[in-house]
Length: 357
Image 1 (cartoon, rainbow, N blue to C red):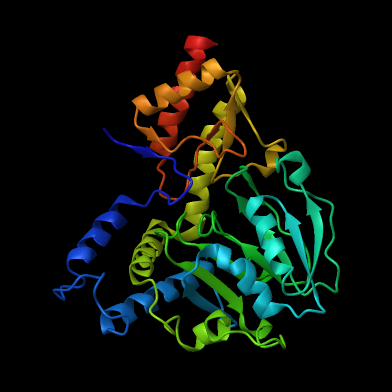
Image 2 (spheres, rainbow, N blue to C red; image 1 turned 180 degrees about the vertical axis):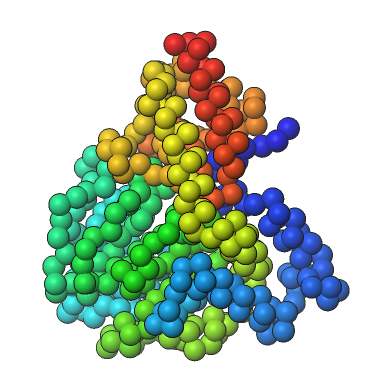
């Protein structure tokens, strides 16, 4: 039976990418060697890494002002690497707290400078994106988390500020077009829309670097990885390879404009049913803040919850349970989730309403 993978991450990958990645495990580029065993200094992998960077640049329309890195350590490592490289102890960075990861990012940054929280929805269990705040001119940077995987909220607007934005885009990277010129630094764990767990994409405007006075260990300096083409040490070869294949697939689908339309169509299909169905309701209190990547919703009672869970499993829906912080259900709909998969989910919701409504 076909599985419909709504896992929040590691997430669904395109079938064609999985097939090509599997072939690469056995024999990469007819070399007679596996991608898992070739040298990261080999011509085959250097070409793969170069293609991955070129695809990032092409999809985002990045200028030469920006450097692209493929690092290890997950997006959580960027919670401290970003302030370590950008913020002096006597300077202030501003954060907006819209979820667990945003909260953790701010806590890590306090080790390196002054941190000011401009707004937070924590006291409302992160059910909305705060508005009405202003970015002070003295801020070294503004940190945002574009999509909140656990709580089902997403920025669908960007603040109008001259202050460089540092943004954790782990769960919606490459899912839509973005005004990249607004951002000083973007980081994203690969395991949502870009590839498997194991590498983290970091994009930084080069003129922001070299301004801090602290001593930074070589492995934690962005300039180290930029100067060595992300190969200062052995990089996560396989994760970069599969990410390259996924970025290639995104390009073949029509790039970020096509991804945005595809994801909007899935979101409209799901949310239209959610709003019409009397047995379910969303957890996000402001509709304009709803995530297209991770819709979160609850059943009206335990009986409906159990019936829906059983029916979803019966048709091959997997990974639909919500995070413990929210409960209920979370239908993660990353790029590789087809519209047909969302239709299966919607059909189960309709069926439950007809039987129990």
